[in-house]
Image (cartoon, rainbow, N blue to C red):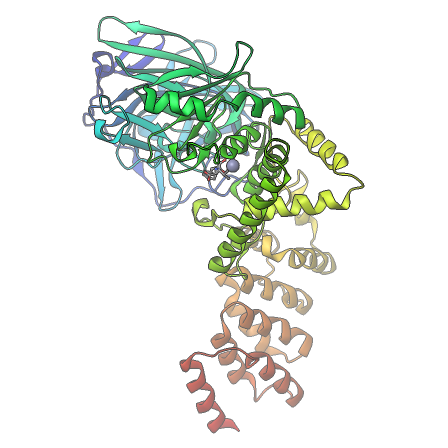
Length: 618
Ligand code: BES
Ligand code: ZN
């Protein structure tokens, strides 16, 4: 792959001829050592405790001849600690061609490509580990430039043929980045815990039209190669999942009068753009109504882009440019509430953002709550109540499918390294809505709660937040000071009280810091072993068995056996019991037997084992 220099940017040589070329480039070495995940978001490998992106600039070409995006992603970053010498970036479905570090004084680039390594994870994509040439002090800035070319494995992009579009004369490409697919459009610190402004120059062959979730400047027509470069910028800091691109045969129609802030974009034609604009004729009134209920709208204009029918969601709240499915255009305006929902995300989601995907309900639950307030005003309270009733049915159906014992049925699902899409359901929407409705009812008047929501949005504007879960307050390291056994017990009690929120990673870290598994004090084992069994921290299992075998105090035995039975390990409990029952006092034998055999529908295997054991011992 050749590189050429245009102005200050290095671009793929072939880019300028109107298409991208993938030559052999030395590939980045793979490592099997997983880097730690982001401390604020288990779905990203970004070392976000050490470095954060404050602006990104994407210079890219959208090539329909090979369904690829290629270009340069420039990350303007700030070091969050003294001695920063490594950056980890998320990517998926692309080839990283080169990695450059820019000198902050001379502007010169150093090629770091050969020193980089990548780690691949089946759920989260790849981590690009970049050892820096320079070492950075806390609060100093650094600039990285990554040249890349996407391939067809990328999860965010959908490439449509002419036949798959409405007007059938041009191809079409659109992205869907939420929750973790932005990393396949370009390399990113792909976590909602980081927000940055951006600018982008996106080039495509004429007459393709490019739209992004940002403000547009005048495009540049490149006379030499029959392409146009579209320029965008987004000054309000956004999380990466709100980055969006659509390219195709696109036209714009303004909605409402000259003062209106709203527009619709889609493929042109009476059957498409005109029909969509008619259905969405009240878009500006919806925006005004939401703004009146909430606080001022910060984003400027509001546009809905109606995509081809394969768009996988009803709507996606990309800032300034909601993406929506044509299924919301029914003819009778009965699905326009989807637009109300996406408009409401302009406050909760796009301004106040969930810090990680376990906190998705902060986006969706609040947004559904606001959506139904506006719907009640505009379409009557019965419309909103029926939506809530329908939502409740969907909520229970999803919980039934997940099972009531998994955190996926809870407001705060614990992902433990799974793809956040595995936990996606109506739960964050409807349980979130019901929770907020419940709190509203505890207030003197609904107006008090409305004021709370307004204050909440203003207080957390343009930040990413969490309400508990794996949240790490700034002094979280203080627990290491719990060297005294009593303090450890107090700490473990608190942890047990919120054990459904504890991940196996957190348990592993605590064990590394406090060595709870090796702790001789039995009061610690009484709490620690049940916790490790519950979260599936296998490393402690042998010690847990020893714990119930070297002593027979009931208060120490019962929690361990109960944890095994409650977490699908009844057979293990039974095995341990068999091995120890001659050692246990008869009172303990009765108690533990009752726990191990407590009412359940035992597998055939278990039944056989029990009857065999009974013949032998009783
Ligand atoms: N942001 C969501 C869609 C989403 C959530 C995509 C999580 C990927 C991961 C969007 O705002 C949404 O909720 N859309 C709903 C609309 C409905 C609730 C009115 C949809 O598409 O059905
Ligand atoms: Zn939503």
